Image (cartoon, rainbow, N blue to C red; front, side, top):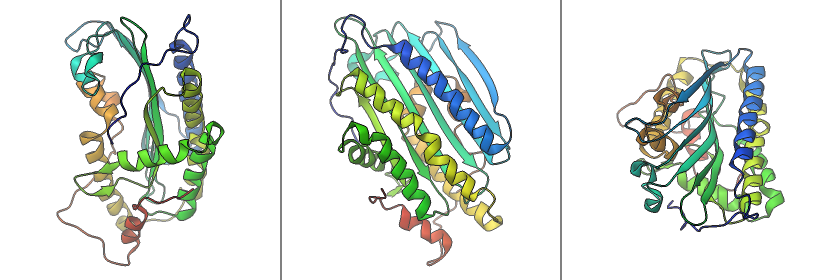
Length: 320
């Protein structure tokens, strides 16, 4: 889905402008809260890796840094990453502003939290969540927007789980008006669609980008509502299925469907593309990939099988 035309929206308080510092502090706290909740689910700690970037160099990206919290071979999560980054520079590289050509060369800062969790048990879905803020300065009013969302990618889906996930997303956005959830749900269905396959990556959730039209305070509040709802949406699903029995058949199908996840991230995902094109930290960008994935030539599940049932869930519908 192409983004809507970007409008320059002044902050409600023109004297102070968008409060990037408050957003950054909230994002750091969000990362810490989510990691604590996931560690309680998994029973093992995440590795914390703090990194810094010095300004300059061929990427033109400037300075900044982040905190990468990663788990591998955990009790529940085969691989998981909850990443915070804050990068800034005097000139936004042209490659990183391809969607917004007028932003190239402007001073900017971008900050966000992104997570992907790949559970070992095929009955526990993979999940992705991201919330982010972008600010570009220069002459005239600053240009800023929020983006984010969360989406669920099951292998052996349960309707109760999908309904719950979508229901929490809807509840998070309800205080801002009845129109936002249908809009962001539809955007998610369209964004997480593998056009070359003609199929959805998963069962969706909510997604938004270039969000500035309600003004800074409301856009920020909506973004916080989505980020803060993540554990409520996902943790009960993990608890329900993490001890379910499975065998090689289920693991094999999980690896096959994980291949679709890899395809999307490398071909379409804006965060991955922005990170790689702008000289981001490769270890943090690519730790969202599943540790094991598999591709087959022209494979189709047997009709009526548990594997075939997944494809019934990949047709977008009003789950909430």
